[in-house]
Image (tube, rainbow, N blue to C red; front, side, top):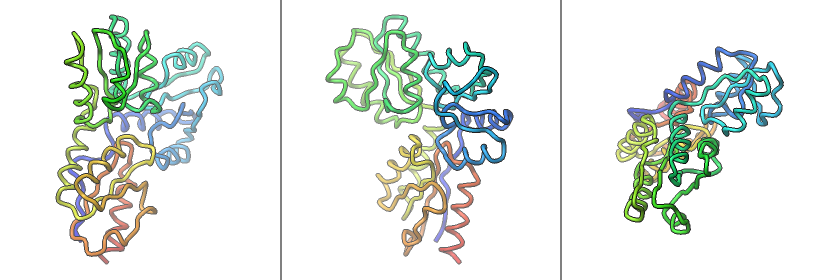
Length: 277
């Protein structure tokens, strides 16, 4: 069986930047998981003594707090700084941008609509920057229940599928006098999604590697599943089931933006060793 990696996969710019920041700030703690990959978080704790704190109130004056790639709520960031905590901001620049857009558009009198998961930390942060609040939706049905102003600003979670975002935009445009649509889906998401789409159309079996709570990994898996019925989402090589590969000729592999190379290589090596030995 041939094993083929997608043309684009794994760590994106924002994650690489955050990992580097964490490695350069030993004996600190991240507020919330730095990235959505528990294995990499465990490595940072073990090798660099970078811990994990889930409640910002735990930090004391003089402590070093690393802000996760997904960003945090605006008021919590302000309170950390006011309390004398040494804040190291590892928020991905692709996430900072929609935060800025939400604030500016809200101040300019637009109703801000965010396409994404209301429970996701990135969206909680972006929503908090809208000075007059914002609404979060996942589909056009939810829009039907809203009474929005004539002027609307639309923002997307950085890891969402472009096709789904376009449906939201197409619903809003004919129903309002002015709709500002901001392309806040990051380049790495575009590239990874297109690469997994192309590969899954040829593969007999697809393995998508990434954290179970990783939004962008779930999107990659959903795309793979659309084109290749035998598609599986795993966190590492321990999740592999070797019956998946029986009588298969091409195994395609992709990985989410928070999946480190060492986990991907472990998966490839394990499949190669067990299936092709």
